[in-house]
Image (tube, rainbow, N blue to C red):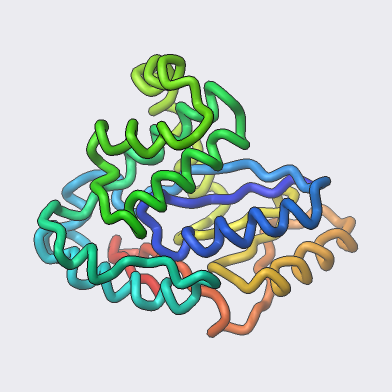
Length: 237
């Protein structure tokens, strides 16, 4: 079974979802989990569309963190620490490119380690994951060969692959993350409880017919996601 896990380094609900996806992989090692890019803020100007300005973004985004922290099984978000920081909230592409470069060097397992390290740097350590030095420091906690990673990061291919996956998300009709696509046919939206994810995947196992992506039907209040509406506004709940 092929599972495509779409996420963004700056996505608050992707933090608890990644933890659950690791639990899922541990319980079901036969699952192939592939990491895919989705950009909530592909460029700085997106802050103007979504929040009025980049300077105004932080206060609203921290309310998203509060909801995500309630969703998180470990309640790891350091919200007060982030309030004390003075850097502007990071955009998506540097972190996504860093994860893709890790995948180019070491495959999906190392990409996952890189993703989690960068999310921990942002949500727990309150560091600016748009800054290249911060990215390198965070990835230094993984087993990545950093010399090889730097070459992959600087290679235009790493950025091209990010954009290809963002385009793939549009083909699938994905509007927010976290989002899981199972066998290219079925979609699971939001940071659902592990038991719910397992139940949905078991339901997919029983399906044989080739169909367009179909949304599973979890309880609406059980999972959270960060989504872009038709006007480019970003909401998380």
